[in-house]
Image: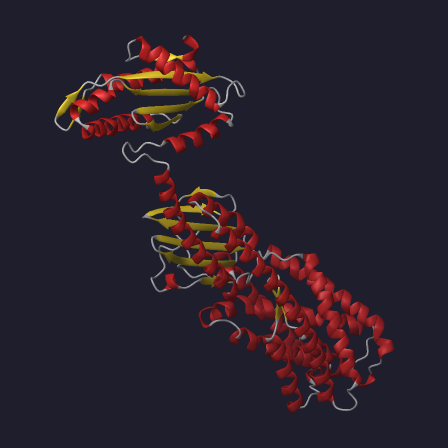
Length: 558
């Protein structure tokens, strides 16, 4: 903000200097103050200028009013001074009444002197070039004599446009593409010149009719351009948003839902930086949308009032931001779109986007994005329920370990990965039938539950262990990147975790032992998952059970 305050002060000083020089020139040469327009005609032409000012076409952050045709008509028929004065009055009215009340004063203080100076250069430089080349104006206008001067006029327009583009890029840090700007300026001024020429054709009949003809043609052309641009953009946006909504609706799990939104957002709406906050079950995660990485908490929304958090926040220029927006960003970030809170059940989503282009966001884009985020919240809440059901379908209710279905899915995945060597440890409780027959099935279930707890406790100490209840009193471990010796060592840790501490269940103190069989696959393609599981089972019964139980056997050592 400090930088733009300096720019505003400088531009006001330059404007005062230019206004002083113009005043001095008018006082020095009173003939320059001749105003050939009657009051009624001036009011009518000013009304046309204001109409075009407020009914503008926005492309790439630039407002195209097409008032150039009316201004050019005034210049060719009445001279440079009336065109400048009426244009300046139109700018003042547009600057005061075109923006929302809360930013109206800021826009006027920061932009009015710059807009006035740009308008003066856009009118004065091409017009002076036109006059210097002998261009006719007023009653002496002829088309044949105006051809070469108009080529000079257009050349001056392009040069002034280039200077403006460089100025806003380097001084105001607004991102404008020079090539895109030239194409649109050529279209705007080419159409404006054509309409001004047609207006001059009718000038002899009635000046107001001539101006009306010129304005009507310009208005119709602008409507066609505006409608075409709006229709194409609306159709493209609708299709992109519909595709993104469909991606969310078919997402099943939380990670899939979040990834779908992060992938689609850059295709849906332009931004230079963007962050999205996802809060569920009192846990908040903030993603950088560009990099799809998790970042620290942003302080952006912390200073906003509860009322401000209920509606989207839209700013078009950096100096529109109030003191509430406390975030460290480069000086060339101007447009901001923040949707502070979209909620559904226990899911709350906030998003904030910034862009280098001025006025990049509007209420229509905010509404479309808000609808998408509501669908995202519902999908994310649904994915939590789906994940819970999915987890329950893959979890053994008694031991809270994964079940055999989950183990087979994990085994198929690991054996198709690059995490070799892979080891399988299969084990069961020795004489478990005796426990059930002697103490009852309730005690047997409590023994299984305690064994599951001990396995989970050991599993938490290592990242390479997948543990499951294989069935009945049988359990299985899948260890990735685990060679034979490490697999045997971990199997022994499991065995001693059972052997060294008696099981205290339902008032009984039971000494429980287990027998374990291990198999290791060193390289991909050496054995399939099912073959390795059979060899671990063979090691369990041949090397474990038949050798007195309470021991570990590896298939390679049989």
